Amino acid sequence: MRTILEAAERVLSADPAASMEQIAAAAGVARTTVHRRFATRDALIDELTGWAAQRFGDAVDRARPETAPPLVALYQVTANVLEVKIGWGFAMDRAFSGDPQVAEVHTGVRERCDRLFVRARDAGVIRADADLDWARRVYYALIHEATLRPEPADTDALATLVVDTLLRGIGAGGGL
Image 1 (cartoon, one colour):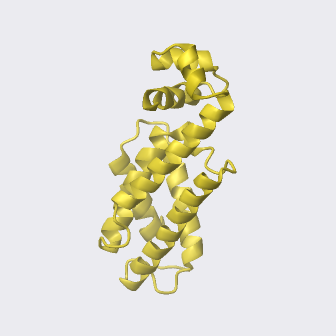
Image 2 (image 1 turned 90 degrees about the vertical axis):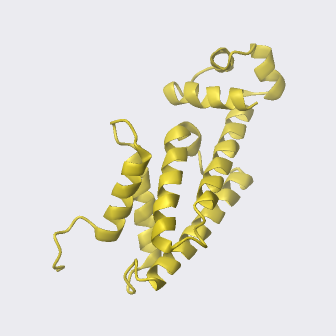
C-alpha cells in the first residue's frame, strides 16, 4: 500500500486530475491492484491525506517539542515539518479535508506547537509580551511560504530561514 500512496503523491502533485490508471502505472502495479485496495479515487486520496497527516504528526513528535530545549525543538520541528510538507505537498494541501482523523492530528500538532511556544517564551526565546496565538499563525505562514520557494528545497536551510525570520524578523532593529 505504501508504494501506491507514494506513487499517488508523486502523480497527483504533478497532475491533480490524474487517474487511478496513471497512479497504478507509477506504482508499478496493475490498475486492479489499486482498485482492490481503494474502491474509488476519492478513497485513495482520503487514505493518502490521512497517511500524510500521520507523517506530519510523527515529524513533530520526533522533534521532542515538550522535552528538548525550546530553541532546539523549534528548529527541529520546523525542519521535520518542512520535510513532510515538501515531500507530501499534494496530500498536505488537503489537510483540512473534513476527515476527523486528519483534523485530530492537526489539532494535536497545534496544541504541541502552542505548548512549545509557551516553553520558548518562558525560556526567553520569545519575548514575554508576544501574542503567542499570533506568533503561531505567523510561524505557520512562514512554513507554508518556505514550501513554495522555487529553488530546490534544503530543509535545514529553510528551517533556519523560518526560525530566524520568526525570532528576529526582518527589521534592522530599533523598533517603532
